[in-house]
Image 1 (tube, rainbow, N blue to C red):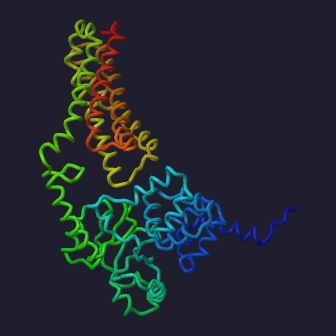
Image 2 (tube, rainbow, N blue to C red):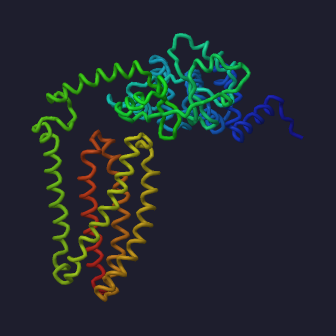
Image 3 (cartoon, one colour):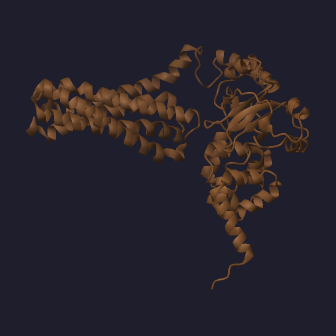
Length: 436
């Protein structure tokens, strides 16, 4: 008979508890000191502890990350989405943050630093990552005790999250202060919070403040989890700085083009890419030229070329738009390339089959050639799959090499879709010429 020590038995029970009931475990840990929470998470598997860590309130989660040893810290950071991890590290003091980042792989640390730095005209650039958040089931007594421990921090509103850490309510501090100590926060009169994303423009934040909803605005990530708060005084200061920066932009001092940038500045930014686009157009023409004899023999191919190129181009544009939006909102990073590429490959294949069936039927009715219908149907699937994957890959590759995806992605994508669309259609026609 194998005897299990009481310590191992308790640890196994806690492990199972963390895995099966992470929300409940997170609620229980909220009442413990951060040092104790860090010790408990470090003592259990990364899988189980990570599930609990993701459900802790941002402030406690940040404190825990600052207290973990090297191995536990590195393991638990892998369980967090990059945006979430960056938001938690941003809440730490600068020296602690740098010490924590030094424990990570250089590439991972670089990515997190990029996520913590927002463009100067966004909400993320003026937010304070130290947002005050409580759970719905927290009592007024518990909330006030925690607030007293945070002396010196300006707090006008507190924000409330559900078990998954998503923002569900807001409450003025004065209402919390006069409430019955035994009442839970969810029983108070919470207002629906008006939030902004970290990538929202400062103009959007100004509009929220102009509507007179609270004296601070929560900043959330794409999953509606709080990552910071913007206070009125910080926004006023940032707006003044933005006005000064705009004056510099108007005289061409900025490195990025704006709507009112000087003509030659705009020409200098755009002309090189237009020249590149011209070169890629010649490349697409060269591909068509490779199959000149096939086109001369089967003139119907020339009529159908725009159909293949147009469909692959639209497919790539759809994929590009979704990926660009994901990069702009920081929903995806370079590490997500395989997931995004795999998803777009599947979408391109399914859409390609659907479009190919309709295209093949139309071409068969028009030309009365089953071979030509088969060729264009096969080419349509191949070109749309390639275009879909390219639309997802190109902006991520350009960002990885330090280029601006917004300015150059469409040019590169047009080249890929045209070249591959022409090559697949005309190449298949050449190989399967016996069926035409």
